[in-house]
Length: 365
Ligand SMILES: [Zn+2]
Image (cartoon, rainbow, N blue to C red; front, side):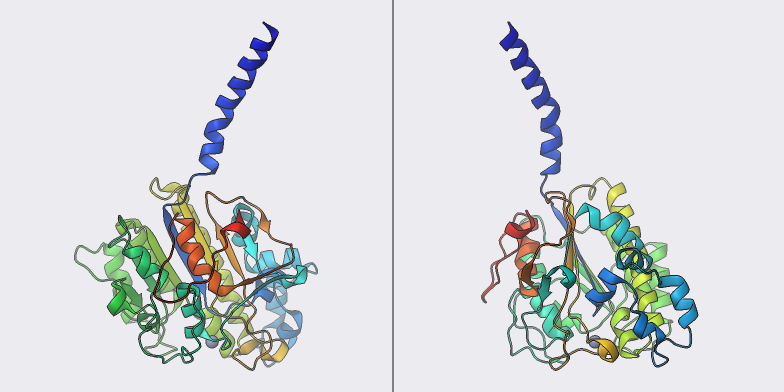
């Protein structure tokens, strides 16, 4: 009698627990990849750099305002001023790698430390050293977005919105069949919403600080958001670019403000995902950068000869991964591992006619 009661109790407890376990292990069937070009791990993990902010060469005559907006004595408080949503809400739901203060290392495997080789590494899983220029022709390597687009149920449901026009070549839009809405490309198709028509018009009429090469992030963001809401892609890539552009101009205020604005857009995206039945608790997010930047006065630049420019970071949030927040364990990971990871998050295996680096699922768990 007593054992029966215990059995019943155990059974009841299991019945209560099972749905929770099943839910927490649900596989992602949607993927959103987000990059912000050349945003340093230093600002992500430790917030504003006071030496750079004090330097008249970089602070745009605005150091008092910079310190007011972004300075606290402790790094973990300071970083929340640049990236409040990321640190307060998003990071605790997933895993963040790359805080070198803890020996948690993420590096590019390619030796060049600039954009085309970096994005190639992220999406093909193969840091082919022949890809050594931002003006490199259309990428001969298959990328994971293209691979996913060929999987059953994914055709026509993969898209990329990118501020920089080089993504037409990096993702080989022509061969891959993945629509790449890059720089001043307008959202294509008939039956566009009023918002899409307005965004298209504003994009074409907007200020072009980087000529035809790159648009302001605000247009890429809202074009991507409208596409997400109306077309419901299974895989979406959004590539922001201002963090890199303002850094190259040596404008530390604009660089921090671009990251801070990007954080607001991450929040907007997350709120949409979590209030939409198709995406809620079924969507994996991969957030990363193409390269790091130099140290001290070299924060503005990056490349093969710039110390620190191969140091990157990434965050992954997915319903089937445990929520560990910032990872403080000693480890060495590489950018080239992200391509296979993206496929694995969707329960797929990325296969290409070139070597693909091992994914991170055993690390992420
Ligand atoms: Zn750059």
